[in-house]
Image 1 (cartoon, rainbow, N blue to C red):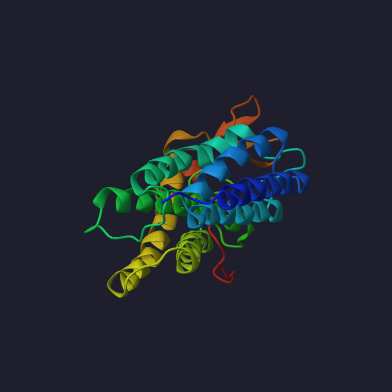
Image 2: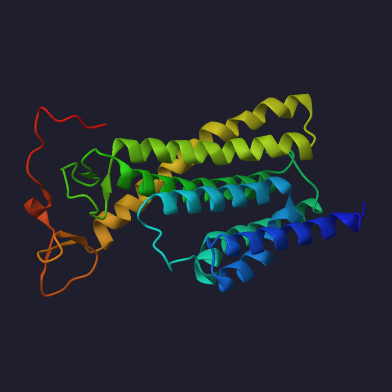
Length: 265
């Protein structure tokens, strides 16, 4: 069944509107907006629920980044960041579209294990990305002292691999939001039989765990592969070595023991 001409026109127009809007709101620089356009077109062509997940990730991560301290003036996301976040997902969308004839399919391993796996991979992709972003930004805003994920010792705020309870819970919430977005849009765009409808709800716990997984993996990589040092001049943790920077390692990770009268959340 051929798709009407009006649907591709709406997809292209909407993608243009979003790309321009993100550029004008300074979430993306010009190269990032130009890269977002084809990525979003591919997502929406494969299914509106896929495009919705991309937009929810971009919107929430951009808002949180601005609210926190990681998004500095002049540091708008560029084409490299857009393609790193959405490029692999776009490839999955093309594969899903080719296998389904560019028509929406419900998650059903009995009908097609491959299509279900690819859609699951797409959900997991954005859940991990969203979980990593939310945990990083909310962790920075948390008043709790972070612990190093590999040793569970208290670390200075900003140390790579440091986690907080608030950050981990945020990662769970971020993954859940992606799953809910997928299901909400699917209700209006994809018809599922009664037997399949209830199975779709499994997306929520799986996306929540994927969000947490993304945060944990990022923290493990940060703790084991990234440099963390304390600058004696700037009095803060930095990510690059220097003449005034002492590498944080072993017992140097420890700050003063937290007071028993202090409250951490």
